[in-house]
Image (cartoon, rainbow, N blue to C red):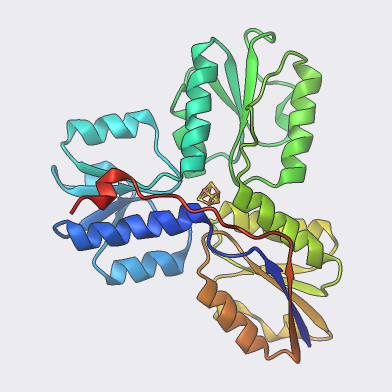
Length: 305
Ligand code: SF4
């Protein structure tokens, strides 16, 4: 068997920064450190931080007044920030700067009076946070099927935004559909789908046709990981999402000569190494389609001694 390793894969700069922020909080604040929602969508990352005493909660109401809380990489709505402020919480914001950029666009587009169409997945924390910037002016579109009945009061004043972890090809289709219905549609100056999502999809595209099977390391609630599995399927290649090496089923490997391996942006690189070791391939070939050098600095609150 041969393993084709897609590169880039695994941790992105936003995930590394978010984890580092929690680690800094553990070192510099009184325990317990609370994190609202999963810091990143990966069960191994969350379990490792829980082992170090971090408490993950769904809502701020579960946190005592004055405690330290970290906001996850997916961002929060202004309503959550205001509640934290009222409660006197010591907030450290681990929102990825590329999500913060989308929030800023949402505010700007809403301020000029536009209806903001957010293309994304209902219920995802990033979508909830972004919609919260201008809840009365924002509508969600998941697929092209949603476009026809979209409630837009003034078709001449309409903008779109994208969730950062969408499939690039599917999002382009939705945007084309929006442009058909709203010729005056305006969008962000630079792509909302982030560099890490784009790079991991490009890297997978470079191996998907050659592989008999694609294994994507990532958790089920990781949007960009799920998009990688779907992308492999669109190339006609069977693909499975696995949290770790324990998720591999022997029957998947019957008659398979080439296994493509990649990982979502929230999956630790060590898990990929374990998967490759368990496959025990005769050869491992890494296909590098981009080199990532992006690094985000920590927010001042995380640097405080
Ligand atoms: S996937 Fe993109 S938007 Fe999400 S944390 Fe990573 S760099 Fe930021």
